[in-house]
Image (cartoon, rainbow, N blue to C red):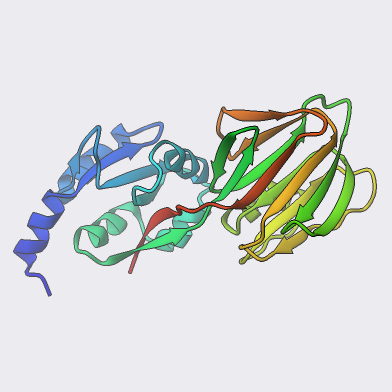
Length: 242
């Protein structure tokens, strides 16, 4: 067990970068508790906002442990990371070493020599909202699931299953990769696969775009092209207080 003096010294050395729309609202509290605020090379990133802020912070600073603080009414990851604790108590526990770092896996989409990585989901969506796309899904190179006409498909992680996936399916899941078929012309029930599955989506009639989370970047798919979606190698790292 570290002495209180050692814990205080450790906290002073904990370099954090604040990521959010209103960093000034949390700066004084961080300094008061003993964190050092930096603009580069942080040990931790403080995601100050809601779930969208966390997703974007992971895109900008992948792999750096995230301390999740609430500044939004929509923050399910706040509950995952710290339950119902207030921001002050979360920071005090991190300062005192009462936390662990949990790995939260992500999805990777690869197409046309490029990759996108999402913490929430990967979305393949029609470019022109007036025209649906036709696409075929194959799992692990052999198991064919569907050929669907519709607006597209969402591949979600458990973390992302309460977002776009849930708005389509009215459901969520806790393990695996979920596939939700958006506005299909015929009934196409959602599917939850093991997280180690490799999913290939062939565009039979396009065009379509691939998106990851709330990122600005996307990959364009023409008719005859495909995207492979699978579990990403590197996870997000979330600080969970104890």
